[in-house]
Image (cartoon, rainbow, N blue to C red; front, side, top):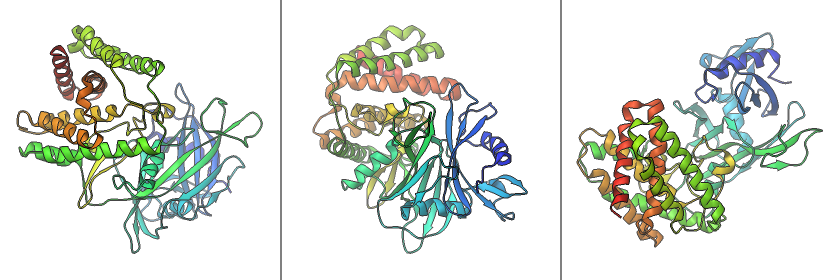
Length: 456
């Protein structure tokens, strides 16, 4: 029996509009049920399409239904009526347990309505959860933490906005773990779904759709080792900058870890030559962000030609082979794990970029540039950071990267400069729109990069 009847679907729109991961802020959701997958007698995970915006968006909404109100789940209530009380399945311990079992028991999830399919894949020993809780504060996904009997806790990332094709957060982390890398959390498994779409040109197409439909495949969830009680590199760096402590040893180790990850990815996942088409496409993206920045940030209005020259020089410089990378790399994406060193997280890439772009081989220097910008942010955010703190951290990071990779990113100064400038332009637009008080940070970075270009 379907949990998502017409009454619940109506209530779901109101509930969905209040979620942090709902992308249509300010709009009233217009929902259509696309597919429902049965987890167990109480739990189903539903894929619903929202047509309220200029482009349809597909959301995943795990739901549970109980015959009576469940104490402690008042904040998770989606709908209540004659058929029962319907809750967010991630916050309901019954629904959360069902989601994890689908992975660890490698279950086949049959469709509630005859459309779609789900399959769990286990990548390691099956944990036995004793309880669960949802992490707060996330913007684009929902993470459930499970306490495990006689073992380390597990985190399940439930992808809320779905795209056809394999999620890079799953694909890249599992490739690294399978190659023996300790720089990522140990995988537990993942959940893959199939669902019908109206666009026959979507990636991830598989056979088996009904008449007039295309059936596509993509990731629904990822389960992996949870590392409790540790700090991310942002907090570690911010504290060091605030207290005036030297961070160069830690930054050098972070550069080494980054190069290790890049080396493994180049070995185990496909690479390709950076041909003229790839260069041209990259330059178009850079120039698009340049146009946005010049339009939104008055301080950059007179620097358009200088900015363009740096970007064109980067596009014409020698490029390495393109490979899989992190894609959204900064200090907040790395954990400081005692006895293990730096551990990298969240290989999903920039969430606003199309999935097809985020799974393409890219320039490894893009990750390097992202981390260099992050050091600037840490220094600027710290009260009383010593002059030169960010510069010393940047150089130490590059030293560590060069020592492991065998190639110094500074040797390709024009390319690295263009990538760092592109990142700073993106930051400037974001800050101008959302946090104007922070705008001086990327603007100062842009000025520094342009000054460096003038000296070469």
